[in-house]
Length: 318
Image (cartoon, rainbow, N blue to C red; front, side, top):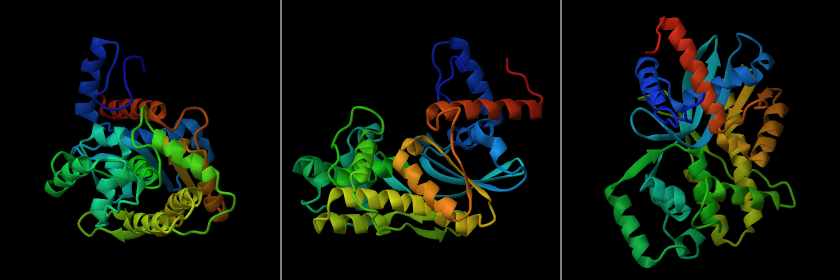
């Protein structure tokens, strides 16, 4: 693993590592999220009954698809050594790429814009920006300039955090999401299922899409109505956990196990809600134990997948 970073095309330390990784990427097509679900096998593969289908939720902040879009809210079904993507979070624009990641208010306003919701000046994310910055951002979104589409659950966490009063700017990955988790942990009672993602099938791709717009609209309404932030944050966590089980019921009702992978699942409260819901449905839940669910686990998964594909093709790197 020395010299190879967390995503295809990212290398460090050794010059020869770049040449070998480019060679592997061109021949075996290892993508970031390929590694996320593969890591289930070395970490806890013995727990899942062999040969039975397993639904895997792969949620993180930034992963790249070959078409240049940003992934991070994906579902896969793994069965008999085969893996297929079956569902994903509905895409929304990420204006300015890294700028949106550093300033969650930008992501929040982009999400509101995509949902057709007004930028109400009582929303914290709206108040976080000056009139001139909001005006420039609206022009950018209206024209679609430098707006990369993303299906990232991590970025949706950032947006919701900014909407309810989280940090307007961050200095490290997942800072806004950690703030949202801390707020949810302050909720003194078990909130009702106030929010729910809407599932629909895209005819052109046959993939199931999880529409976040009803969730965001309801959250905005609750913020404007003065609902305590911990209750909103807790409700959002429950909605994401419910989404996982909703996809399971829709696409993999016979799956005896569900895997949770990706950096978003470093959120202990989300894992707790997911465990409770899936176990209540009689399903085993596969979690990381030996390796982390974030970039470290993804990198190991990519390496294992590349090894297997190279062996199957009887190829040897230069």
